[in-house]
Image (cartoon, rainbow, N blue to C red; front, side, top):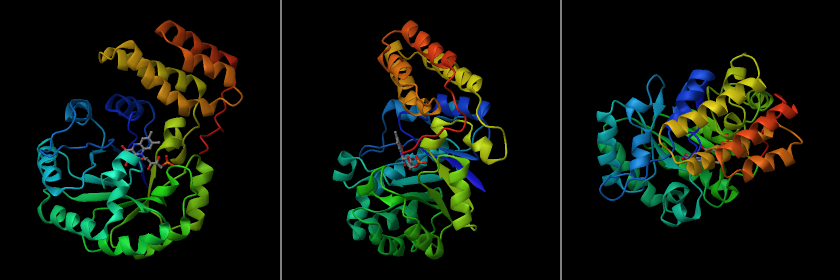
Length: 318
Ligand SMILES: Cc1cc2nc3c(=O)[nH]c(=O)nc-3n(C[C@H](O)[C@H](O)[C@H](O)COP(=O)(O)O)c2cc1C
């Protein structure tokens, strides 16, 4: 089974990926949060720095591009090839209103003729194999058979399916019926994504679809960084491991020169998920989210771990 760590903008940066891979081996591949090139193929310095090979040593990383125009995509693709990458991922799933309004991300599903034209130019000229990460539709999953007809015209390296429509954002139930249709009719190998938060969820999915050979997990793996290890038969997360992981991340963010407030903001984004491993900890959690200084943050985190509410069998539940 191929296990992939989903791209999570604001969460799974290069510092996170490095520390995660060292401390919780188990994921085969990591997908970087999207690069959004401008008309000339240039990206924000921060997102560019995030995929530089020197910041991603020792892990199998696939860069992702959010773009609906072939020219900037191809300029960026050349640069990524020169950096040594072997595959690119095209984002056709981002549900954000501003992205969709620009016909990017899941917004590319609004006009299948334009999608077809864009893919035709990408697959004709891209120097690297392309995989696609898609939703099942824009307004409804019933759009998917028509979308798949277009994907099937091209030699996609892999079709990663976040099994909901854009309207479902991150909340609706994944549509296993339409995912099964995709798995049966896709020319490209498929990878399932959506609401796998625990080994039990994965077992349930695999009992319904025993032929699945690739999974992508996002929020569940952020909440429980040992999830991939567990899926490989390893031990569940221990409270001390999570404590050490968050401390190492805090050190890494500050060591990379992030101002304290930025580092705290990034840690709090992670705590939005980690807190699910601590049932009944609302009051202590509040102290973490309220912390404005490093000292206040460190004290609040220490209090949470000392309170002993950690439970390895808890999970993020959308
Ligand atoms: C905070 C956040 C950031 C995300 N960033 C990206 C991204 O950069 N690229 C992408 O394709 N998907 C992104 N996603 C979607 C995830 O990769 C994944 O498809 C989604 O969370 C469903 O999988 P899960 O239920 O395992 O979390 C993001 C999701 C969240 C919640």
